[in-house]
Length: 115
Length: 114
Image (cartoon, rainbow over all chains, first blue to last red; front, side, top):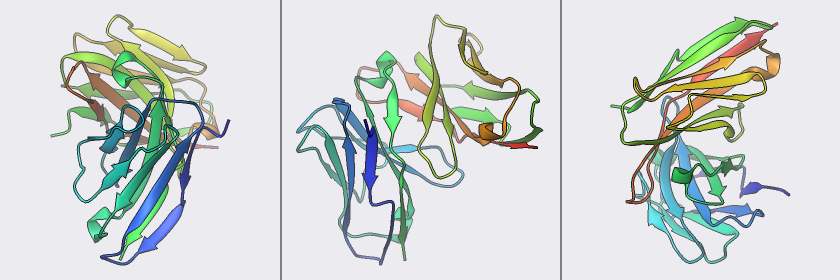
């Protein structure tokens, strides 16, 4: 099992460019999440999905869009990148709702720099 | 104001020594509390998950305690190893039916030196 994988690992964008981050999991998990991690701050939830074809907003959704067309994939899109979106992005998945003590498994992260 | 506060912000200890990391939270109603270990350049990895009724849980050399009355948790690391150098993150889940409610602390950065 590869667990949770993220593509790409690093990316540099110019302001206004667009890109898509791909997250894939091979554990047949229902729930998937996108977080961002900035220096001096805790992880913050961007969007999440409770199953194929569903998405929901998290704590900091502005400037991002997501799609969950297949159960194993969760895509995070930036339509017009801004320097404030410079961050490390983590994808995670879980077999159930974390409120019920299900384990969350994180990917290795994507380091994005917007200049 | 962050509802999950961790202390200290950073810590340096000698290999073989013990240490204790603290997590205080104000969120309620409480559902569960998690400790994660995050190595530099990697994603967080779960160490323990504790519910309201659990006041201690161990995972090898890691022992987490929870006092739900005072809203405090600690993570004790015994006989530290160089590989324990990482950021340790406390996460508190609010018992809510409306969506998703995990509150992440900022983490404690631990450096274990030879």
